[in-house]
Length: 327
Image 1 (cartoon, rainbow, N blue to C red):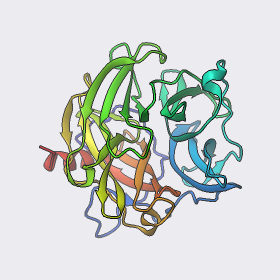
Image 2 (cartoon, one colour):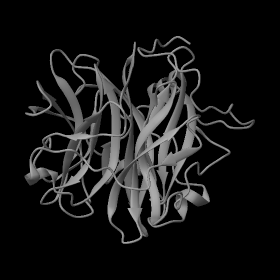
Image 3 (cartoon, helix red, strand yellow):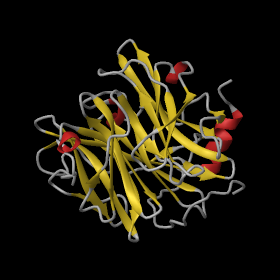
């Protein structure tokens, strides 16, 4: 592997070898969907969820839309990253300020370890969608922080370390509806409270990413730059189609794009991606990376209904986007 990955060795992440005949940069797990829509009582669907290594196993925060169609966040754990136990009750955030602590809705979480704790970001309901923030050290008690931005915003994705002296995040300013537009922006904070230094990263680019784009899993630090897996949306005659692509961002100035793939990594093709509450969606929210081998396990939502897994090698994705970049 020519690309150096800055991170931990995680030999126990879920993995399946590339199937014979597979020619693409990504292949799906034969066990998909790994989390069915009804894993816990009163769940209508479980999807767009975040997973991290935790105590030699795995933990995460999961989007659960209940049978009242309320968008909730639940904690969960797994020994192998495939078979999951989710808390049947939603996360009850500890918050000192009722103004932001009053729960309206929460969805599409991301989770990342930075320095001494796990930070959670999600789309939080506060007079419209904005970026909610919290932290935990045990996936049992979660402490809510100030919302990062004003409404309207979605897809808040933290970097796994500070850039210079500041925390860093990607987000997608949007509107209060189903957002028929959206570019990725970069922001910084000295304290996880006040956010500024906003910079434009990239916008739409035609084809599968012609309507809007949004950051996906936590960026992966490599010797080539930050590897960002993101979603792109095409508006078809039958509605939105969500696919997954990748880009490389500068390590020191992540709003500067080194390379970005013209072709998607993968797009809705399986039944569990094409049929569900929202058809034709693959929505990556988390990725586990073994720095030693370059193996990558990507968790994504299928059709806004289930959680699925896909696999890849980091160096192959980087080669793929460099070979046919957006120009």
